[in-house]
Length: 206
Image 1 (tube, helix red, strand yellow):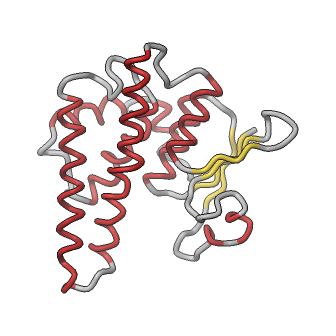
Image 2 (tube, helix red, strand yellow):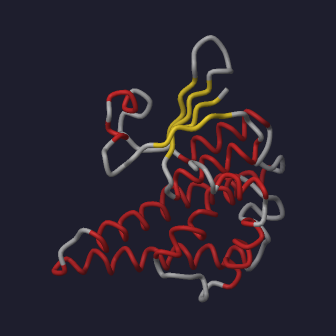
């Protein structure tokens, strides 16, 4: 059994979608970020930097396996089940590359946009403008890719799509507000969002 330590954010949904898509049995525990529950000693033992989500796999041997970070979690459950990673080496490399883009580039862009739009004083407008440009840059890259292929790795649905979907379904609805300027990304989000496992994952935590 896997324990999912999560929160109702784009990052949290990435982990629950990955678990639903791979069919692994899990239980979830939700954390209140406003109350700082992710910084409590119990959670810091799972992830020393206090970022949610994390998983604990208690069914893979004598010692539990702890994995934190959305890309690491998605890769771990994909490798554990043999799903969500293409066998073709070119497509597999593309899946890892686009998964990394979401985790390392798009995620921080939206985190910065959120912080500067909600908490920074008006005189620091440069920071907000910078991160909003980065958000559009990330959406533009996804739009270009998805205008060429049905899924981010190519013809096959993968961890890259799992990680990118909450970007379109949650983050982009906050900024820029919709995907009207990105028709290929919008069509892809509709296809991915129709998957039953994705719909279940988006309801965790309840």
